[in-house]
Image 1 (tube, one colour):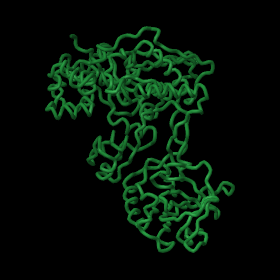
Image 2 (image 1 turned 90 degrees about the vertical axis):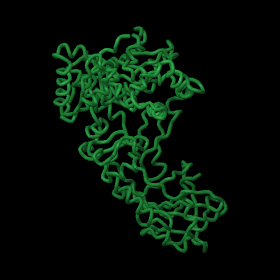
Image 3 (image 1 turned 120 degrees about the vertical axis):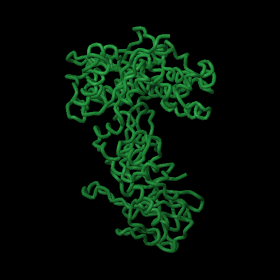
Image 4 (image 1 turned 90 degrees about the horizontal axis):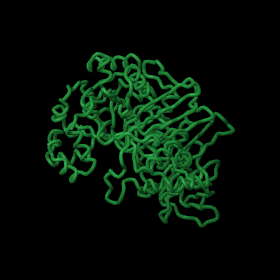
Length: 574
């Protein structure tokens, strides 16, 4: 079996951190971590010097470096910022494939021949990217894309025929499959050479299809040239637009529609896409082209995301850190074309234990799209959590399939406070124990201890620019937010109405709650107030109110608000 073709891969270290600097202005020279699912997925050099590593939990990373800057993982931001780098590489070589934001690859044969060798080609590309985008990068060259990616992390050129020996000493963690790596470690397989020495049939029987692909990579045999075939010409989908597309939102809509068409056409042939070509033509005849490569199979949503990211990169004209803008379209896009440059037979996928992987999700997606087609796009909505002081402000309903962007930027998560009824364990002897002036640090009788905990946490997490939302209701969130608050009355033990003064002093401890014309219910625990004074600079829009969490004798927990002397029930807890 012939060896894989020579591949040249350019890798930008810590790319999510650099993308945050390029797009959001977060200094990459400071300790910075990028989090996804509360775990570190990338960190800056300064953060590594403090002992932070990928895979750490947020709390442990902040414990090792209290002044670390925390940034949320954003694949769209990474892709937009990487577009100038890909454009710079494309000025030197042709046929660049984007593997993921921060890494792109091309065949090494052409550049090495017209640039005077593989080493000269690697130096030329790294130098050009540094001059054009002010981004540090490394290039690796080896037989196959997988080996080239590992070589790029060392800035190394593996000689032809030496890829197997180069891979043999690498640990199995280089495969990037945590579940498989954990199992191999427990079986005593610690290097790629040990894994490659296992019989291919036994690997397939024991580890399944994904394990067999990993076994091929460990043996120095790229899976794609052997598995990918040239698709027939009729798989390409094209969309013509009478009005040129020059806005990102219009481009996102076009991308979603075209991605659905491509996915349906591939499904009709029993195929799935692994490498996607995106082509666009502007009103002035300018042609744009980019190839996206994916390690798995591109679903309809994944295709739409990559087309949207690419169009966003072309239309927004994102620039590199050096300030030089890449060539951007001279006019709006009038023709968009998706070319499945690499496909696999869908029948070759390893089925899940309970059926085809993702089948239920695809069925639900088709059903929801059908409902939207009958009743309109606003008929099916999903909730997006964002920022705000009250529960109704924090939730935005967006149509199914639209970009899930919150209406207001959300703050960093607050530590969990006691549930609404927790104050019942500490009986209130008067109004003062439950009155706390600091809006974000309210709690029950031990709110001083909670304030210390909050102070530590906020002291550790520095700055992604987000509003703090003072007066925001802390977790847990209510289960039901009433569309129209219900009028209520709150009385103390003597039967007098409970009022809150301008200085946030509660006249007496709440003892009974009456909702509308219902019967009074005894209040067994309460927390608050959370004061909010919004838009005081605009008298016509100003609002001043205070909120309480109360627990009733029957176990019901409610969120109450008092505004202008009127008590309201805003939400209900489970």
